[in-house]
Amino acid sequence: MTKPNLRFWRRFVQGMALVAAGVAAVRGALSLSGQPSLESYCPFGAVESAWQLLAEGRFLAGIGWGNVLALSVAVAIALLAGRAFCGWLCPLGALQDALAAISRRLLGTRREMPISLPRKVDRLLRWAKYLVLGWVLWLSISAVVPPLNAYCPLRTLFGLQAGSLLPIGIGLTFVTASMSIERFWCRYLCPLGAVLAPFNRISWLRIRVDPLSCRLCGRCASDCPAGIDPVRDGTTHPECLRCLDCIAACRRGAVNVVVGGRKPGQ
Image 1 (cartoon, one colour):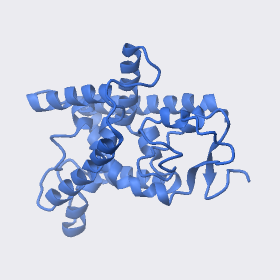
Image 2 (cartoon, rainbow, N blue to C red):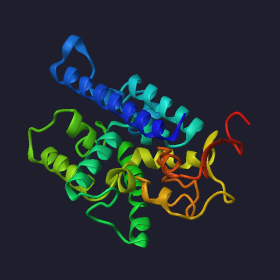
Image 3 (cartoon, rainbow, N blue to C red):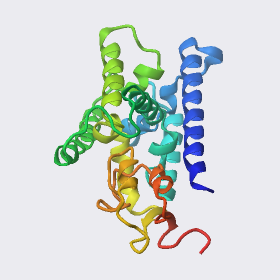
């Protein structure tokens, strides 16, 4: 696959994910043919309900086997290719990429975003999503409904929940933040990202930078939507979304997908 096709196919897959999320949201809101809502397919719902399912054999309200299946698929993908679910299939990730593109178009720039946090501040804030994950898991022990239910942007933006000021505020905050800092939700707050992040170090498919071919031009770091430097931070970094934009950006072919330690086909 040529490098220009990498961007095209990722955008195509993300577009399909957005369409599927939109269809599920509308069908769930209108209760067409008893169709479940989009929340019934959210992988993180299974994480929220894990304690109750294991301890008492029941799900939290609104959670079911569809969530378990979605989480199983996300974990299977993570074992194969790390956080590829985040980079290719997540509707919120696709929406954030679209909002970032709109923001750059308004600014008239190729990669710059309105806000660029200092590296140390950015790295510190990334730990917040692990705190969110811990908070959700703790509350889920005695919860009846999923703890993140009222605050989740997926439910707000795709669940057509705009009946009060809270979801409206969450939706506006998500859009504003995503247009200011690329992949804001993924970087700092997404608890599913915190669950999948460790798989980057053990996944079958990985990304490798060839030190003999790399000329440290910085294009891969500049094009990374997660704000990491594949050369400086390493390609098994937990924040890598496996979007493959770094491969598309490299003009020397120094960044490639590898199976363990080899390129596919070798």
